[in-house]
Length: 239
Image (tube, rainbow, N blue to C red; front, side, top):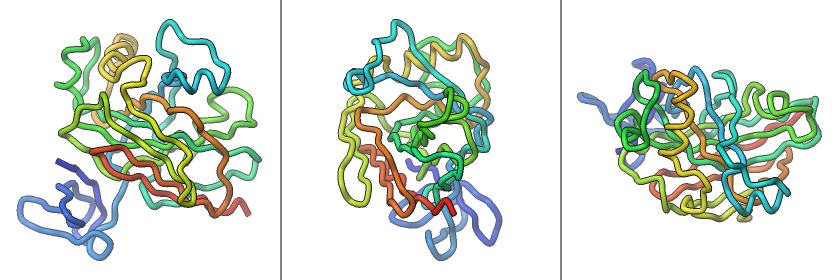
């Protein structure tokens, strides 16, 4: 099931997406005419794992981590699919990175790997936008609008062994399979839950495959994960 959060004349609602429509218990909305996609959840925190693909380590000349490596983004980083990615005036090196992400369904902590499916609502897609020329991860990655998220939450998918691609202006820049992750999704969620209490709607993103690269104003970014969907955003001007 694809759970979509949308803005309608009846307010903000969550329903099932099927064939370009959003279905609730008693009403149907047509996307683009009667409903506008919003970010699929409202996280208090986004927990973002880095250095989680071997090819990325080789490309970026990182050492293989013995334990998961992560950083945090705040709720103001989230924008929806089709919202513009604002190019900050204080950077000259903005990059994309197509990541699979889990959405937490309930307040929880100290979760074992075999319990993860009980606390995850489903999976969505995040673009880890990075101002590469800034000092430190927080300055680079945790600014407003740095986490495009969507298009919806897929509730019925095994996150291990699915294909992904990222296209910039129609050109494929990333292609990988989630089985290439160094640390698998359940392992990562369990590990983080030993240190944090997750809140409903929180997001855990599992890192980017190789070839994260620069984007410029006007670029169209499409990140696809098999069985989930496509996150689409265009980079706005920095003027």
